[in-house]
Image (cartoon, rainbow, N blue to C red; front, side, top):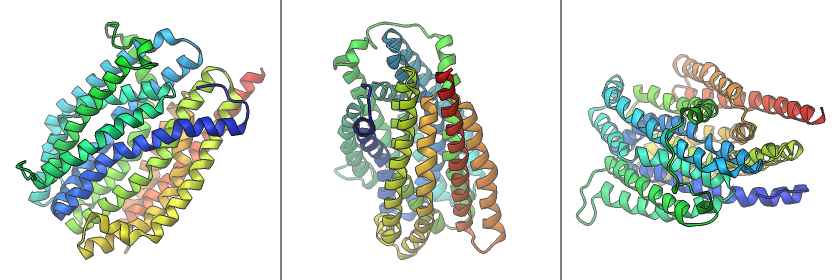
Length: 452
């Protein structure tokens, strides 16, 4: 990254970083999108099973891998402060932490998966698909967590186009493996939704191996000698990673897990309702990649500016990102409302599921504006390394306001399953307001410190 002197230069530099991140996020999410869409084409039971499995997997992965996203602000501020010698050591410690976290999840999952699924009121077929889908995914858990660290390092250098190219290289692999293993083509076993889990796990290995090769061989990454010096695990560095990363991971977990909690609560409804809810949520999550990508970009640019003590530039970048998110998310929300029936038909041709999915998508329109504010604001706050208060705000907004309201509306009014979605909308809106106030406070605090 380079220093910018006016809003035009900031916009140009921000877009250079943002566009590859956005394409990368779309590519990464497309794996889950393909899992859901192609499983739905196989059967409603497979769609429901993958929906339940994803609802358990996504908050675990996003929450724990969110801890590893601390590598981005750590490296960004080291680069901004021109302290490059510490970078390879930080990355290697991040990889050690990634392997440890993934191993922890695998061990705990082996004990709790069956009891959790057994407590849910699932049809036997859906129960078995969800369980085997998660077991299949587990084979790719360690490389996926490692890739989170490697990608955070790449992005922190401002080389987001590299992450994009790595993801685009592996995306066709995932699609082909899904096609072969879900539908049993060319002599491969016909595994349905479970095949999607194996396809994703194999893809995670490919993407991690490619990232290691690029960092080892290509400049500017090879200049840091990340894999050419052996470092013992440093619990002091782990403390820094977890001190910054745990609040980030918890913030992400509180946001993603509320969607998963709603899906699990919906297990009391029919398979049609579960499948429709998951299809609508899956597409809404795809649209969320826009504000999420802006959030990740803001962490990089704000982190660089804060590291260089250019606090005014950090403020300008923060609100530039929020403005871009609001404009584009509003456009996507309008398009979602207009084409909701056509979107629903991507997932299934069963009219009952299509009709119900289109209804859920109407509520998803309101997700867009709240996400357009709260996600970029969180990204800016991470650039400041302000993460502790953020996760408390996220917990209150989503779990103390949003989810209880959704339960009340779903169980005491005629809204039924739609009541949960209204609760989600209110929780996201509360998060957008409180996080924005926090960003104003931090920016004013930094500005006053600069003047002093």
